[in-house]
Structure formats: structure tokens, C-alpha cells
Length: 377
Ligand SMILES: Cc1ncc(C[n+]2csc(CCOP(=O)(O)OP(=O)(O)O)c2C)c(N)n1
Ligand SMILES: [Mg+2]
Image (cartoon, rainbow, N blue to C red; front, side, top):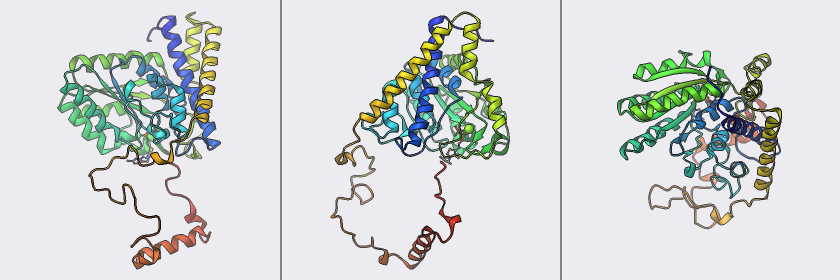
């Protein structure tokens, strides 16, 4: 059993976990009020994995995550104001309000995003680690991704290259037992995901992702190996999300009793109990940590709400255009009326048939067809 750190460090761990929990609860509420747009994936339950990991990273190490990363940015030190403002689509957000919940980014604190493509962050992590190696720096890239992502081609290809090129990257699987509504047993042939590392000659270890002290200790050791020996490593943190995959998840794939069982392992409550039992923290300390998290999040909502939306004229700023040819797909600077080929009657017959059958469904002819594909993302 990993030892408790001193009072200051314990307060720090508790404070960060409480902040993430409160932030996520409030983000969920603001989403219901339609203040935050797009999709919203909460990491409530996964706080120990996030905070345990970031607490042993160096400031100059890189962190890259998925679309469930409000907490990762907060743990890295990005102000709650900026993360909330990004959710609200405001100019003061981490990505100027253009990325939203799935694209939090803070290059200054080396939090490299925020990605909506499952497994898409793995090759980018290898690239970051390659840059460190190339520049002869001893920084490590920590790449966090889900159990579902460990089935993607990107996983295999990245693990292979990282091992082959001895890249300083720590792969950290946040195994919360589900990829959307598909359970681990139903989506992965090998359910101990740490074993997946062996096929690439990489060391892998499964740890208790609900225990912040264990995460700190084990991830700390792996980080050290990656840094000093210049080779990749893999940690699988066994954790759980208490909320649905996204804000629009009816959760028909799991029993309520399962969620309740995992609540017994709550990373925050168990850490508090341990700290208080061992006399490292008092009830007042805990109360103060919770209060501070409440206040920070309340202020973040106010800040986000009062921040301006990006100016309309800035719509085409910061777009990535591959060539200098300003095609209509990049910036349409033509007059507003329809141009040749844009009118329905110009379309080929098949396209018109499809559009018309779509319009018929939209009129309510076939309710089965009315669900919006992708809305559960
Ligand atoms: C390449 C790709 N395929 C499918 C999706 C749709 N999708 C979004 S999240 C998700 C599940 C991923 O599960 P996991 O990797 O376990 O991460 P978790 O959501 O549990 O944190 C899927 C399939 C996507 N975003 N990208
Ligand atoms: Mg998962």
C-alpha cells in the first residue's frame, strides 16, 4: 500500500480531485441548460487516475488525452474559468471558444488536447515523444486513452513505432470498462489490457485507478523508467465513470447496482477517509477543500457567462487551409445568392431522390428514421 504524502501534498491531491468532481457536475448542469453546446463527456469517478498521474509529471512533460479531458486540463493547472468558457463557446476559452468540450488545449502547460477521434491521439503522442528525443530533451509524453481506443489500428501502429524507435512515451489506458455502451468483455479479445503491451516488447502493468496513491506510486515509477531508459511503457488504470458515456446516454447497457458498487470505491471519499484516519487531514481541511472547489466552479460559470462570444468577423480566422487556393470549402467570399450547381434542381437524379425521401421522413412519415445519427457521441 502506497504511503500517504505529507499534509501539503495530500491537500493538493484532494483539492484537485474535488475541483474536477465539482467542475464536471456543474458542466453537466450547464449542458442541460444549453449553456454548453456540442457533446459533453464527464469523467466523474476517474479523478484519481487523472490527478494521480499528473501529480507525478514534471511541468515540462507533455500530456495528451481524449474528448473526456476537462479534468486533465484542470489537473495540469489550466484555470477553471478558461475550461468552462471553452465549454460555453466563449472567446476567453482555452481554444477561443472554437473547440468546445472535446477540444480543450493548453500548450503553455503542455496539455496537448483534447481529441474527438478515438485513438487519434496515440500517433500524435508518438510525434511529441519523437520531438523530445530529436531535441535530446528528457521530457516524457503521457498519452491517456480509453479501453475502446486500445482496439484501434492506431494503438498497434503507435505501440510498434514507439518500441522500435525507443520513444519516451507512457501509454496510460483509462479502462472504465466501457467504450460507449459496449462492455470490455464484448469489445476486447484480451480483457487485461496491460497484456496488450507484451506483443510490442513493451512493459505493461494494471493498477487500481480508483486509488490516487497507487496511481501516483506506479505511474511515478513508470515515468522514471521511461525517462531514464528512453523507452515506452504502458499502464492500465482500472477505473469507472459514474455518469453515462456522454450527456445523452440512456445507460441501458449496465445495471444501476453496478454503478452503486463502484461508488463504494469512490476515489475522493476513500482518500478523505484515509487522510482523516491517519490524522494527515482534519474534517475542517476537507470542508475547506470542498468549499474552495465550489467557489472556483461558481466563479468559472460566472466568468464564462459574462465572456463575449467570438466576433462574427473572426469566423474564418485560425482555419487550417492546405494550399493557397481559397476553394469554396475554405472561405466562400462570393455573393450570397446560390451559385451554379448549388440549387436542388441542378443535383443528379439520385441525389434528389435521396433528399426527397429524407424530407419525407423529416415530415414524420417514419418515426424510426428520425433519430439523429451521431447524437449520442
Ligand atoms: C475513430 C472513431 N470511431 C468511433 C468514434 C465514436 N466514439 C466516440 S467515443 C467512443 C468510445 C470510446 O471508448 P473508450 O476508448 O473506452 O473511451 P471512454 O469514452 O470510455 O473514455 C466511440 C466509439 C469516434 N469518436 N472516433
Ligand atoms: Mg472506456
